[in-house]
Every structure is written in C-alpha cells, then in structure tokens.
Image 1 (cartoon, rainbow, N blue to C red):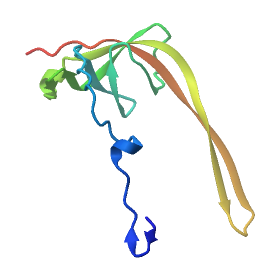
Image 2 (tube, one colour):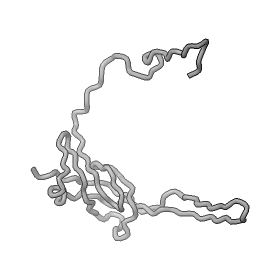
Image 3 (cartoon, one colour):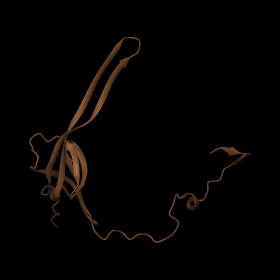
Image 4 (cartoon, rainbow, N blue to C red):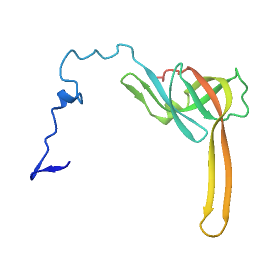
Length: 140
C-alpha cells in the first residue's frame, strides 16, 4: 500500500467490494454423499469418483473399451474414510478405457551463450483416458 501523508490507506469494507458474502441465506450442503477414491496409476495419484474421465499415462496393454483395475490408496464414503492397507488391498477401482491420445507439445530448448550451442527437442506424452465405472465399498 502506498503511504498518504504519513498514513496508510484503509482497505474498504469487504462487503462493499464483494470479497465476502455478507448475509443472505447460506445454501444447504448437498444431501448426496459423493464417494471418491485416491488411486495410483503410472507413478501418479489421481482423485476419482464414479463417472469421472481421467487422463493417466498410457496403458499399453489396454484397448479402447477394455476394463482396467486401479489400485486404491484411500476411499472416502461421506464421513467414513478408509485408509487401512489391509482393507484397501481388496478394493480395486474399475474403469473403462475411453481413448488413447497424445498430450500437448513440450518444447525443450538448450542454449549456451557465446558458444554457438543450441539444441531443440520436442516431446508429446502419450495418455490414456479412462472413465471410472465402479468404486466398491470397503468391508467393515
């Protein structure tokens, strides 16, 4: 903030500028409980729910329309969180392969000043789009 005659400018009220919601009815929390899971694929972790389409590193053995199983690291079912490795060992998230495609082009440029050294390289990562069809419930 800029000083004005030895004083700091006062920040206007949050309600006037729209930073905060200053009243009115607070919307009710969704009554539907959303089940989601954290799964591992290709060395990365993804948060998925039933119906989500997720891009993962290419699964070379799967063809479009095949069903794949993803190992589960965590399952959240409303307030119930399952993180026990013994229970999660039996839970596999089912997903259907939707598409194989390439990602955006990444340009890799190497340059050293005053030496005439220039190298240009490009890369497009291969991905598989999968649609999550089922997240089994944890046995209690």
